[in-house]
Amino acid sequence: MRHLLLALPFALLPAIPHADEHHHHDEHASLGSHEHGVAQLDAALEGNVLEIELRSPAINLLGFEHAANSAEDKRKVADARAQLEQPNRLFGLSAEAGCKLDEARLESPLFAGKDHEHEHEHEHEQHDAGTHSDVHAHYRYDCSTPDALTGLDLRTLFEAFPGTEKIQAQVIGPNGQQGKLLRANQAQITF
Image (cartoon, rainbow, N blue to C red; front, side, top):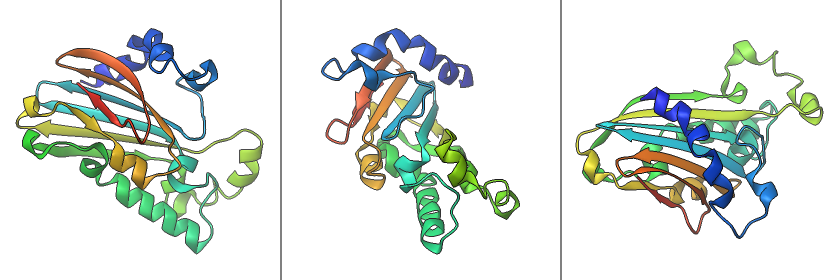
C-alpha cells in the first residue's frame, strides 16, 4: 500500500495543472515546494486499507513557522497536534465504512520535545534565510466495509485550519486515480 502513496505525486503530475483550469499556472508549482496556504493530500484505498498523507507548511496549521517559545505559541502547537490526532473528523470518513485508525504519525520540528528545543532555537532567524517548517501527517486505517467509503470530505479540515486555503488532493481507489484542487467551498473528492 505504501508504494501507492509514494507513486501518487508522479502518477498524477500531468493532470495537476488541469485540476482547476480557472487559476493561474503559478498556483500549481511543484508539489515539493513550500507555498503558504497550500497543502498536499495523498490517499489510497486498496482492499480494506486506507492510507492518507497530509503535507502542509506549518503556517497553514499554526499561523507561524518558528519554534514555539511563548505560552500562546505552545498552546497553538498543542491544539493543532490534538486536532491532527483526530483524523476521522478532519477527513469526513463515513461511519458506515467502519474505518479504524491503525497508525498515525505526525512529524514536524515544531512537534519536537524539549530534546530538540536548542536545535530549533534560532529557527525564526533561519526562516528569513529560506528555511521553512512543515507538518507531515500519515494515517493508516483498516476499514471493515470499504465499499461504503466513497471519498473524503475535508470541510472540517479547512474549518480547523483556516490558514489552509487550498489542498492539492490526489487519490487512488477502486475507480482509478484522480487529482483535484480543493477549497473550503469545494472540499470533497471521491475514490
